[in-house]
Image (cartoon, rainbow, N blue to C red; front, side, top):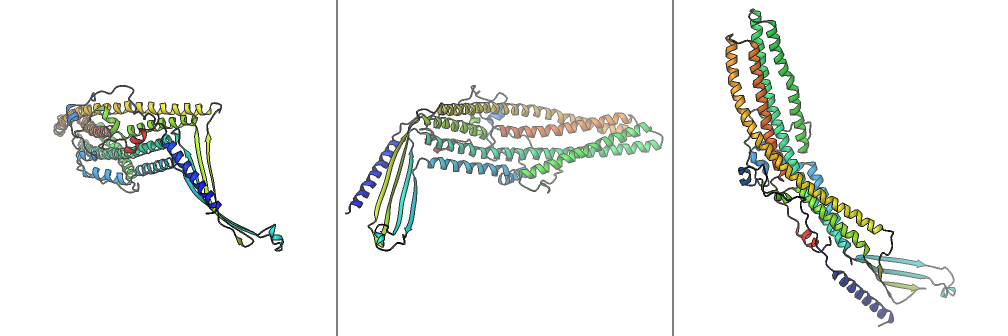
Length: 493
């Protein structure tokens, strides 16, 4: 065995021992406390204050909560939107970015291995006797380069875990986008049906007013009515006609908004008119307990993941005070020719272990820790506020839902009675027992009550949609991923 081979073997053996030592140091780094889940700023109640017995005992709607209304058109629209909406596609791209970032941070825990090679040739061009002092050379060199920052203080692991927490937040953002899109499609659909219903009501009453005006005009020619009565009847009909453009505009704008939600061309009609649409009964919505919102609502899951990410980045910032250990190694082989004489291959190696630790930096590291600590506190406060807002939204939706149901029942009775009085008033007016002004007043009261009932039905449906949205929809409770749980268990606060 040549001396160069023995030297090469000793160099490689030394490099292997250094790598084994560094790996052992990295693996034996002391474990640190886990990231603790945040707690609400105020204790949550055992049940929602405005939840009725039926709501507390109702069964969850499942993932397709929009099917609770049993409207095939609504179900088809929501399912189409979930597959084609641009906001959901954007949220999915954010997940891809977060996962790539997590992979990039995780790669810092492993050595970087590279290959380098070079070839060189020199020809002096001098006579052969002189080449002994100025030889012609040809060198072929190849080697493997290894570089590794050994994570002694856990800063790199904290950065990796923070990136994975960002991925959890991004995944919850996808669920949040789906919930937002589904609820907005349901909302716009009910607004569209309400506008179509009000349009039919106003058109029917406008036609009745025009017929009344025609009868008054006939009586005016016979001298049985005055010009004042005729002008008043025509004015009432014209006033109703003036309400039609606004309602047609509302129908058109909801069509275009639905088209955007479904990823369609807004210039094309999205939903066909339904002249026989009847408002569905309010579904029984399971409210659960306020504490369940922490896992049911995607925005709260995302906010909690951001709290964990900022806490982990605080640990990464603190790790800058601890020593850093760098290992580098270069092992390779070189073939050399001198004046057409091939020399024996030469093996080379270069192994280095570097140590670095901050001593004085004018407070830069401490400032970075304070900045990141403030960001972690901000994320925690934002999460705590989001929890309170989530409970408030559920309570408000429950209150609006219950009160709107009572209002709806009262308005339905009002419409029934006023329609009955209108039929009697029309009969009395034809017989000349009441004047036109009394009939017009009754017609206006019918219009007002029917429009109010239609608006109440819309508000009741919107309250149901808002309650589903406030509860996190029918999506299953989001649990922390297994990877996040295991990584956080050994990541410092």
